[in-house]
Length: 201
Image 1 (tube, rainbow, N blue to C red):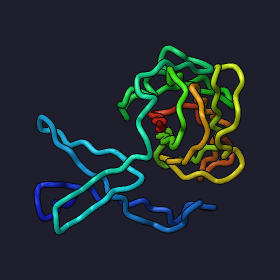
Image 2 (cartoon, rainbow, N blue to C red):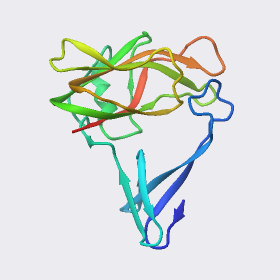
Image 3 (cartoon, helix red, strand yellow):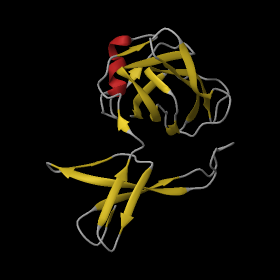
Image 4 (cartoon, one colour):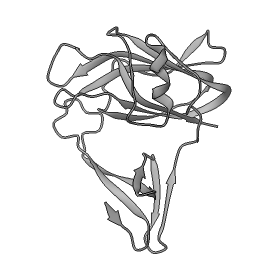
């Protein structure tokens, strides 16, 4: 954690890619995560862009659109009663499906929006890390879906993904197609998600 010239704090978090086979971005980098404080606790979140001016003591986190999905109505292909954990804003809660691949999680944004970004916090078991094959689909009526993004065959980053989106949708569906473990050819994972954030305008 670093303090700038004034009262703002950021965490410079390492994103290690060395050793992950077929990495989308094989370069290890640092991410600047602005920190806020409340009642003795420190909080931080991910932003695709952080504007920083050390001379003027200014840190401006920039999200790619408005957060649309938090606490909206959700469904899942199994264990729907815990599906709302995925968009409750708490990274410590999770939805755990049944051991069936593929599995889906869907959020109703309550209105049609122009989509711009989706951030997904994936489940990983320490020592048996996996990357996920997944698809993102959008729908206006909740019945007919079109593909927004297909990463069911290409490599995906471990642990956390931030993907640009385009197109209009009211319903956004995440399909967990498969998980590829780093040290095991057999996928013994159960489909589960920690947090999904959909952005747009």
